[in-house]
Image 1 (cartoon, rainbow, N blue to C red):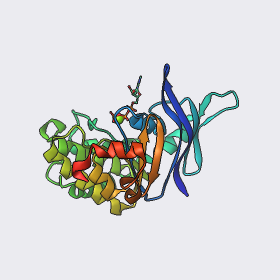
Image 2: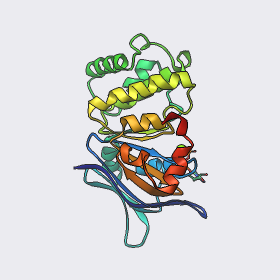
Image 3: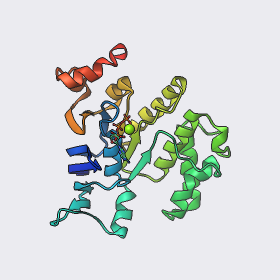
Image 4: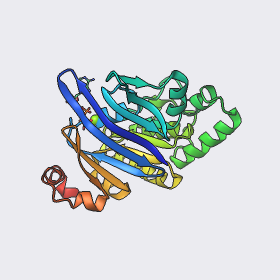
Length: 254
Ligand SMILES: Nc1ncnc2c1ncn2[C@@H]1O[C@H](COP(=O)(O)OP(=O)(O)OP(=O)(O)O)[C@@H](O)[C@H]1O
Ligand SMILES: [Mg+2]
């Protein structure tokens, strides 16, 4: 079954049409990268898909369950509170600037929502959180506070926090763009290591070599539309003019 299906999603800010009739889907365990120039609508698409932003028209379906659709009156309708809560528990989000709670320890940042929102067993949650911290290379940091960590470490805590909620699909919006180059590598390595967890990932990134290495499918967006998509081999060797012109800027690393 498809984990996520977006059909004909559109979004404008005032007069500015940012997402123009985008349809895409994500299969179980699939890793999809979204690349494209600054301002092409990548973050807006992710924000619409995760319902942080309301779309103007279109359809959003998670695991066959409709989260949002365009009604007969042309207005977008969202599922009820209870259904949305259930749908939202299927996915997690990791942003550029971590959004950790500054007054919570690393451990509490990771365990708070599983214990208090998902109402899961405390002991089990702690045990799983320690395993996640180990996977992130942060086993000695459970009592630290975010301000005591590097940007790369904060981002790895943010990833552990998202994983602790056991999502089926994880969205990343430029997870390394706020990091110094030397910290970027460690975060990309951690994201790569998630590939074997069988969680689907949708990753907006400007790290082209990373996108090429990790993705099952690459989506190239420009001007609010999907210009092309396909295997990394296909997209990175594309003879499409817009794709080539964009990738040409990254020529040195490919
Ligand atoms: N809340 C908003 N209000 C008005 N305009 C917005 C808003 N959010 C985004 N935009 C505009 O929508 C367009 C697409 O923005 P978006 O952030 O989705 O691009 P992006 O592809 O993620 O770019 P980048 O690679 O720089 O992150 C831009 O022109 C932006 O200025
Ligand atoms: Mg963006």
